[in-house]
Length: 284
Figure 1: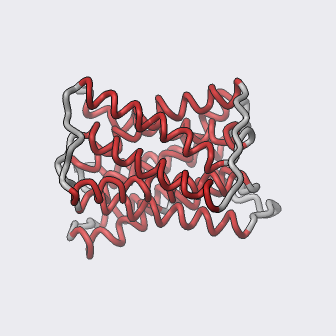
Figure 2: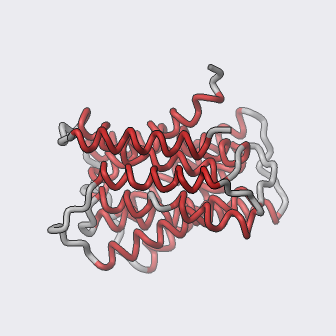
Figure 3: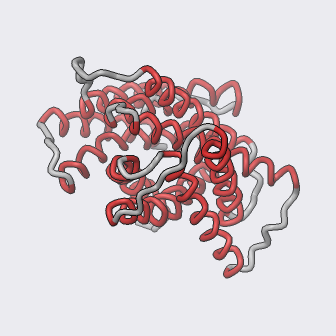
């Protein structure tokens, strides 16, 4: 198996691990401050990599706008919505479940916007994928869901769906490192404006925060996000986002392994259903 064919598996593992480290980050910082901190260093990292690989960051205004706009949606509205909702008490599992609707929403919009053909098997796969995710996460009826958290999570869902379609529709053939640099700039600017005008910045640089933030900078932003951009560029948007259905299941397994959280037979059954759904959606 070539390295390219295992990219989706690497992506799912890295992206899922982000849910494990989000809670310790927001427990030790104001969420928008943490994200501005994160994407400042992500931007610096991609800038240095552009210099090292001799990729010019001088690009057309149209490409600049597209990359920064994509970054505002991916790193700004999507991550900002998720981090904010969790910070005010939104259960992580329910937040992840709402965001897991992304592949279904992308399937609905890919036809009119990208003119992608959505096969019947992709709808079947989407149904199985979402059903499996519901089984893994469950919905605790007794859990209080803050209204602001629910709104923020829905905004995050709309943002990542929009940015995925935008990235596919306006793929500008920029080198990934250059595109990722300007997307990080867009994310950093978005969160900087939020903390300048709307919230009181606060970061408590505890060892827990630094370890969790290092994980999200290096493994998620440098690793998982770069793989996601590559997958969107090479595949249809609807097929690419189908792998997101594996995120809740994988997150549950990681939480069981690293955080000693409970993993039931129902969770395992849901993971199997989700895997089958993703396979049906993405197979040729």
